[in-house]
Length: 151
Image 1 (spheres, rainbow, N blue to C red):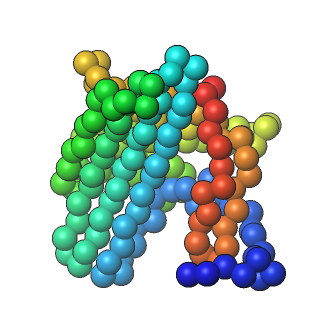
Image 2: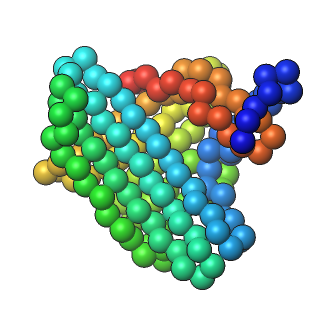
């Protein structure tokens, strides 16, 4: 798809746009992606994918931890769709009663505050992030024009 800048008319989105969109169409992929760089030369990537292909549904999670751009830990897991719980009102996802993504909007500042939890005590991370730039969308396509900063 090409975008003509003269036709670009961004619209404000709400925290609900970041929530789970339980689609009923035949083929749908929904992805949540977060990454962060830290002052100690570590960086992380966390993602959750929900795949719907007809009656086949799958949830895949993953996280990657890097030190000096070298992959230190990589973990990908598949989960039955029936084990996921989420909200269509705000970003909130749990698998087997363990939360992965949770977010709220601060009433006074209107900033979106995220909590991301991946892995376990042996390997993983818990992050508190806040969205620092206003996101936009073009028609129904959400554009990832946001930066996250460690809270």
